[in-house]
Length: 122
Image (tube, rainbow, N blue to C red; front, side, top):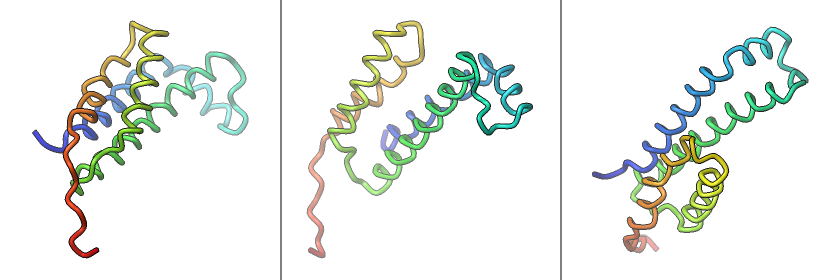
């Protein structure tokens, strides 16, 4: 199966965003009703915003990985290390969470290390 790592990360991001709407739906309605500018005034609304923004950033990471895969380029090992560290911290701090879902993609980043052919036009 090829080109699945980025799609997997985007899938996790979508799940994260759907979970955000389920857990923080009321907080999002309050933020919108009050106008978005300077609307984070409580711990709950702050959590809601960070939860949603993290899902969006994770989706962007998935899109970038997917683009690399589409162009048959490797995901940088340093990106894999950074995702591994972030995910491990998340699992340690919140073992009952969706952080676990990132491990298949992270392990694939490390195990799909094939040499990239040199550019023929260089």
